[in-house]
Figure 1 (tube, helix red, strand yellow):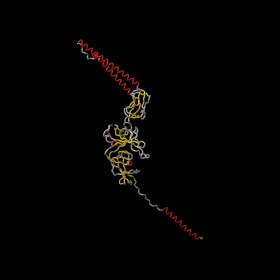
Figure 2: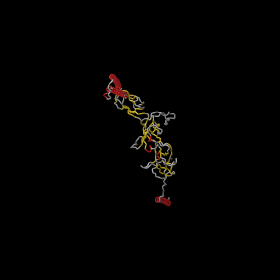
Figure 3: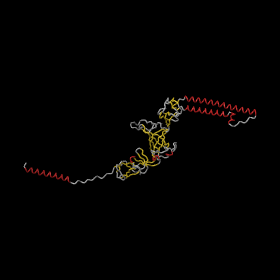
Figure 4: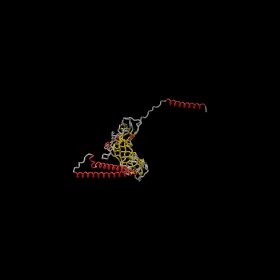
Length: 417
């Protein structure tokens, strides 16, 4: 290869290097292209309709079942327990008048026999006093017949001694005292049998066979099974929804307020029908709530209920037996409230709390493109639904999506279900 060929290679390489250098310089010093951010997009939200309802409003509360009647069975006389019934155990069941325990009656039987003897002696003394009084009156009449001038008997106490009247009165008083002592002895003998005047169960046994008990010593704590009570604490705004609440007087009447009591046992929910029995006289000073007492009759009666809905049980499984509404059961209580009114129902998450002193609000979707705040007056929340006073339009759709940033009249995009 001669020198001319090398020259053309060098020239071509120079042109190539120069072109690359020019392109690099233009790339470095060329002005940057103008950029623009995309316009902000309105947040996408989910909405739910406002459901308008009418009719009776159920006021829901909770409480724990307890007996309507509970007492301590105590000894009224002293002695040693010589007999204890099998029902006298924790959870034992007994009927009214059944003897649960007995104190040694030997001394009290002896006291009854002695009192009977005293009565017999007092009757004899009274007969003697009356006989002597009759003899004295006959002697007086005989003296008056013989002389015809017998003086009239003196009306003073000393004069009545003539006919033995004070002796007869004393004998009558002694007989009454002896009969009263006999009645007391019989009563004490009956008190050796420890009984309860109602059907019930034993909560706790506090004395057993062979124990010595003095008068007033507790033997057991027992409660009645005829009725159960549930104390439901309600805020005043919810209590105000129950008609005639403060007129309940504890007795059954045509104006009584019905209630449904529910409890869960073994994965099943069971219900009992009850009624509002009364309202406790004072508002709780700490919680500022009204205590409504609901009573359920015959809480220990077990009856078949709806068929089990547990997934592992087939459709042919038998209906479960309702358990008793036992003492200590945690319950949910629905009390029939205001009748004939209207109210709105929205999802619970649609109600937004604000700072103290300001009412809660819902975010309503106006025309599917704007968020507006609407103040509301909640009545109560039941599970995932909140009941509101009817202050919204029936065709309102409320926003259920949580927004990190929101303001009244902001732009939104409502997603239709």
